[in-house]
Length: 193
Image (cartoon, rainbow, N blue to C red; front, side):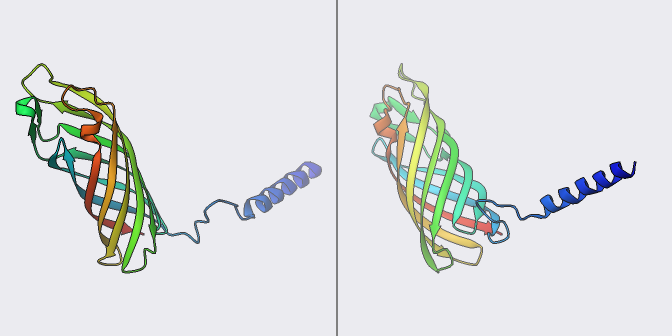
């Protein structure tokens, strides 16, 4: 019994020694400031040569106020009528959701910049009262470059420009090239942590 207890004590001592060793990791939690962010935004972009607005936002986590990873979504907030009524897009007829990644350079400076990307999927619905009415599932990829301004230590105002690549629209009056276009963005980003 004495040998058994000695062996058990040695195992317990070895286990505490192993667990007391520092954990090696790609990112050391003690040195990096983890937090979360909310980013409401408005996108201005042409669809079939008509200026449209998409509203939405992103919610996610931030790592050291440099790397932002999140999920978000956007929807059309105005109407589009073209081609003599053959194409009619109403509010919410275009929507998409997906994953967002952003790398911010010099975030502690008053003015700074970031590179971001959004990849996701969604849908477009043509509400025209013609035979070309219908819907299509979309794949969206949207890289952006942004200029940001620190309003407070946790709130930023940003403007950006990017390009929305769209694939999947097989509607007669609304092709992928009609939906793919330059995008101007205005946003606020609130970061906590």
